[in-house]
Amino acid sequence: MTQPSSEPVIYLRGRFVPDSEASLSVRTHAFLYGTAVFEGIKAYWAPERETMFIFRAEEHFRRLVQSCRILRLKAPLDIRRMVELSAEIVVRNGCREDTYLRPIVYKADRRIGPILEIPDTVDDFCLFTAPMSAYLDTHKGLHVCVSSWRRIDDNMIPARAKCNGAYVNTALIKTDAALAGFDDAIALSDDGHVAEGSAMNLFLVRDGRLVTPAVSNNILEGITRATVIELARKELGIPVESRQVDRTELYVAEEMFLCGTATEVAAVTRIDHRAIGDGTVGPITRAIQDLFDQAIHGRLPDYMHWLTPAGTPVLSSQD
Image 1 (spheres, rainbow, N blue to C red):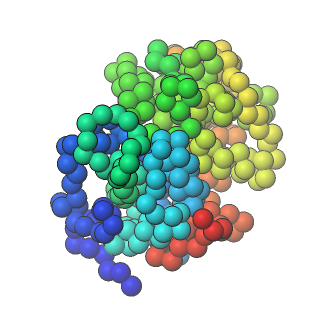
Image 2 (image 1 turned 120 degrees about the vertical axis):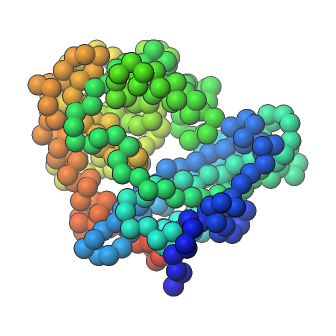
């Protein structure tokens, strides 16, 4: 069995190297032009089982490959191997707390010019880990605003792909919200409909139903979003509508929450200085938070197929 390293390791150029030795040239194409795609994956410590569980690893790497296709990148490794490396790096780094994994496929050429594909293009894969508790406070109510920045359009830089360069849009949205005193922000699409949070999907509760913007509204096809939909329907019997959402629906919602790999499930209780419902975390949000927490820690037997135990990856299907 692989023993934890004294210094955290990073997988780069086909091997594990100490963090202090993992570096890229400033001439790297991905650094110059943002020509890379990535995933954010979480692994959770399950004390009852004395193991780390990586949440929905296969789905994340399948989406990474899809992002590669959109950006004309060629993933050097298949999905199975990337899952195996994820389990291995968690073990090598001795992770025993909530941990964020960041795999990246990037253009490694050292050339000037933004063209994505030419003969002899070099694409590479790297992977690192970092301790991470919840990205936002998942239990206290968040106060968010509607951002003046619009979400990038699918015909500009597709939100369906997690392109590194596209996160300038996220940075502008989140930074302006923070400087104005808000916890986060909601971005609208170019036609003025609700898209998502700065870097997370959005759900409303209206008339006892969950409502979330459709995937055609310039949103990331979120894996946590899909998890919430499945848990709500199967475990709680709550209907879910995926459709176009108007801005003013945010103000009349009974409940609201944001969700994503880093965010998990975070309640929103105020938007643009207006209370959501009665201004407290609602019962549907709390029920989904509880189910999600049980699922990621291996306490829901019906959803163990979502979890990869670190060191012994098990996939539900072939690449």
